[in-house]
Length: 316
Image (tube, rainbow, N blue to C red):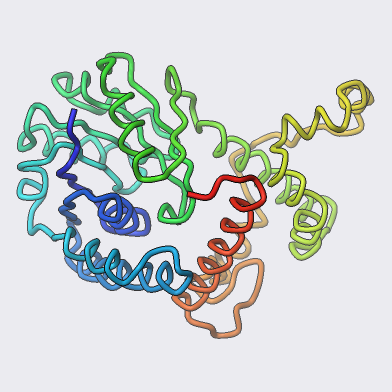
């Protein structure tokens, strides 16, 4: 199964980055967004991401130019998917919007095309037209996907057997780390762990008055090194499973209940502190442009990734 022509539907935070990932992997990519301004901005975001990768010596100038040459934009969804082997859906996480997009894809895409959704938590399969179900799957990425290698691959109840190996082979060929699930696990693994961590962090701020700075200090200096080297389950082996069991049996920790309400976040958002793009969230960013902050983050991630690969013998 050759997956050479890729349509990426949605050109926002993830869409533009997924277009770049596939172009760097050697595919021809057609990018589309229903918002013309978002589509126009995507080109600049792709160039900025490439510049960061080149600055970190992850790609060469020739690879950067080749990736740009492989990406085109489309004026309509029909044009984008017309000749696609693989359609990557990266639109907003709203079920009814996805249902509309899938119906339009079904009307215009070749029957051979695989439809892969980047959804973070929705069960998208009931939203996909029946005729498309055998060639539909989840391919969920983490931001920024041109740096973070994990790709969650999950089939639907009617996905043909050859679809998952084809996606796995494609992304392994990019140098990525696809994790193939036998069935859809809501939130996958990494997202579920992040969700639990989010709840506990917000609880500690709201109930115990700890600061965001103290939480990050504890993560950086107490958890990161061990998790990076061992993972979590192996870390438990090193701790000793009896000690882990005794800690649980003591019941000194009870997980927070998810009520669906987030007063800590509500207060910040209502104050206009919605994150890096607004100039402030848990932290103040001193008027530094969001693009500069993302650039700095990406460079630091690339440096860390290189060091981890060297320490574990996983250089590409």
